Length: 341
Image (cartoon, rainbow, N blue to C red; front, top):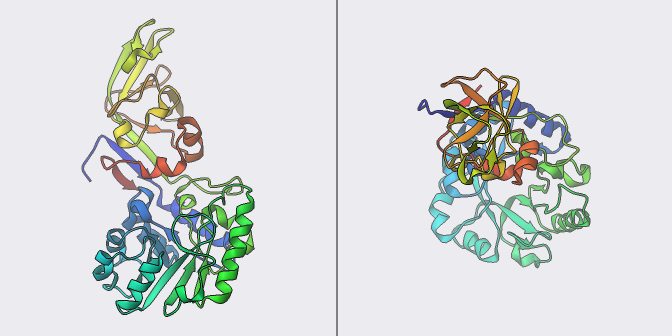
């Protein structure tokens, strides 16, 4: 804790509630957790610790550095970006941390370096990472596959590719020996039982994101707060912020907050964002600066040193800013103190 003038208030009970809700919606499938990008910006170790205590056993990260950060806490870790030659020494450090092999070269490298438990990604139509769904059986030969995975490209919408990917993945799973199979991300869980297979791996929804309209009952986890650096009066006709984009129609009281786009509160919130002083909604005025935010507090009792809460309900904030819910989470900067409730 650094006593920074901006902080993230993180609701651990909401995080656990969301995982349990998604686990219940996963039916008989186990429910894992994507904790890449430092736990979607919340802090991976804190997320893993809370979800492990709630019963989660399977965690997914992007890189080996991310794996090393949580390996002592997580019962099982899958590294989604696979194993480059320079990753092999790390990949052999832990039995419970496995590469997700994505290419024929990665599969060959794993076999030739001694083999052992691994996961394998199958590309069923996203054309991102993974062995093609129609790859010959020899591509999978000699691998001790714990989890066979694929990733849905359009799970958050009604799209014909969803069913095509599901069918392709089921066909691969029928011919490739693996201990278990995994297809559904957050939104995929809500597509129905045919998409859940043996293991689901939600990400966004764990952290309070709304991946699809069916994802009701999830709770907000992240609430950015910033301290008031100054309260000042702006007279009618004066302008606020860079480029004078906001002109006051009447006298107003302003609060200047210690947060800006360098902290992930982007310029898309300029003159459309909302900040709360208690229950009172205070509109953002003018352009968001690198480190500062101007807020109209004419209707609120606000003084220098007070803490105000940014409206960061992810679906609403995404609509206001034009940024995805994923960007809003993972873009939260390092200057925040992260305070778990």
